[in-house]
Amino acid sequence: MLYEERFIILSREAHSLLTRYTKLVPANSPLAMATAAGCVAVAALVRVALTAVIGPTTPFITMFPAVLLAAVIGGLGPGLLAIALSIAATWYLFFLPKGGLDPFSAADVTSIAFFTLGALLMVLAATSMRRAVERLEEAQEKLLAALDASGTGTWRWDIQQDAVEWDPAMVNVFGLGVRKMPRNVEEFADLIHPDDRNYALSVIGDAIKTGKTIEYEFRALLPGGEERWIYDRSRVTYDAERNPLYMIGACLDITSRKKAEERQSLLINELNHRVKNTLATVQSLAIQTMRSSPHPEALQSNFMARLMALSATHDLLTQSYWESTSLRDVLEAELRPHGGIDPQRIKAGGEAVRLKPQQALSLGMAFHELATNASKYGALSAPLGRLSIDWNVDTLGDGSRQLLIRWREQGGPPVTKPERRGFGTRLIDRSIVHELGGGIETNYASTGLECLMKIPLAEP
Image (cartoon, rainbow, N blue to C red):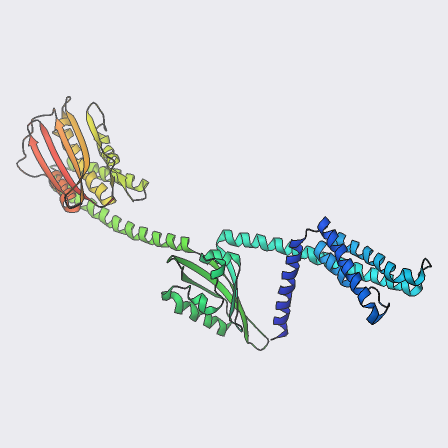
């Protein structure tokens, strides 16, 4: 193993050890002070035990580790306390029996001074290291929180040992438990969708050969069957001889973005389809209105009325992003030019029904033609005329559902069956029968026009 790798591993182990101790005992707490006293006591006992082997020389030899450990575990205060207790214990155990209350010799003073200076430097270094570790831990916690909030995780792959390491945020990106984290590339590959697995592994292989930073997307297949889109950016680190050591990278959950892109693509395709249909409808309205209008003024009036009816339904669908709209809203929009739904003159009611875009457009045109006919020749052309529209959803014997709409006019001029089918009648038939696959039954009763429209509905 190379020296750089050994240094990295030792540094990580030391950081892990320091982190464990700094979290175990709060800095400068009573527990830290007691720990410092305990370290000195153990060091003093060990030094006394070693007297038979090394003699009374170097009395502070076991106190240095005690001071260092106290400073690492407890911080500056416990470190200084350990220095004071070490000097007191050493003086009592080694200097006092030798000289009583006589002044210390030059060698003793030098030994105490050397220990005090060396121990103080150790305490300051250990305290600085402890604070650095605390700041590093705080930075790591902030980083993990930021990664988790952004749906990003980081990873490291030891290529020589084939060992994969994930941070906690990476576990959330893939929706796995800590125990299910992959330990090598093979286990990681199992998380990739089979259709994307060869592609992802080939990209990783090319990155190891070229050394370029790579960016790629793939689908992750979770144990529960859920699919997630993952964006990965990674690079390879080499040694001096150009041997790949490890690969590090970050993964971002882009499932929401991918779904938004798919939805946008579908909406664009649907919009193109509907624009073409709308243009075709407008073209057909223009041609048929031109053929059925006796003079230019009627052509303009009839065509603009039908165009506004089509626009009214479009406005309703736009408000719901072209997903659906209610039957009552379509009816209100088409009856608004004729006074709108009024309990005294125009009554409308039925259960709540949501119409798909094509159903809304076709019914809107049918309602417009019926309302226009009623205002010119039917119930709405007479002061005492009344119009009633009601609807309900009926379930047939085979389980299918159909919408029944009843249009009834009363109080208008006498009604007779027309001798020829006008464009309005043909437009209603095309809207209900040909475009919606439904049916229409028209009764030209003397009391007023009656229409029964039947429109098949999909499952709710």
